[in-house]
Image (tube, rainbow, N blue to C red; front, top):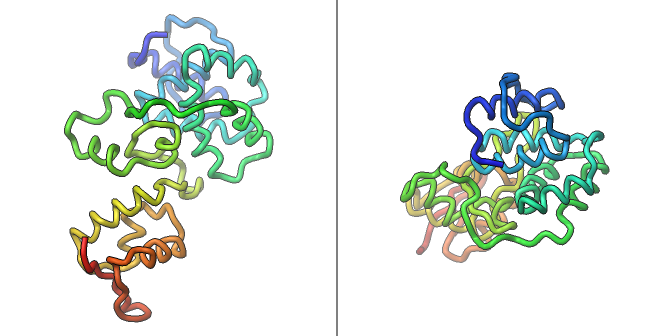
Amino acid sequence: MILPLHQGESARLYWELGRRGAPSTGEKRRWKYGNLSEEELLTLAVLQTRYDPRLMAILVDLFRTPQTNLHPIQFKERLREVEALPIVAVLGEFVLEAAVPVQVKEFFRFLTSGVRPVPTQLFYRGIYPLGSKKMEEAAIKPLWGFKKWGFLAADPPLLKEDAGHPYLYDATSRFQILRELTSQKPRFRLRDYQAAVRFSISRQQALKDLRSLPWIKKSGLGKGTLWKCQRL
């Protein structure tokens, strides 16, 4: 498979996925792949996610329902052949954030069994310009769903509004975000911190984070509560 797909091939891939229930349309254009099996088509889509963040969200949505036409063993072997199992493991982190059927949980448990994180590397290829803020963000405060499997990324899948808020940052990344927030706003409200982590953690977790850091102190009560930085 030659990647990334060009525009026409990408449109065909989106069309094929739309036929299978994914939230995508695309166009039925000619492409060099002919009639792919379910396993081959979805392997191609998984590989293409490293060049297309929008496709990542489409696949997360698709995989949240059981894939009845997909042979799990053949799919895993196909993914293994092209070294795409760690990519599927990343997808699984976001798929399983939702309330999914038990078949989906078992499917991803099977796919990720025996998979190990890759050597640290950017997940998206050709997306973040060298030296850009996005590149810096991916390196300093990577998203947990990617980081767990060795990848660095700053952008989560843009899921549908009713898909809920996935767990995005581990404690290390959240504390880095707090350091940046306090450097910009020495006094801030709880909601400022929640916004900085994209509302991906509960209010209770946000409070726990703030209380765990000796260099952040609480000031005031109720709606007037502020948090302030004592030192960095």
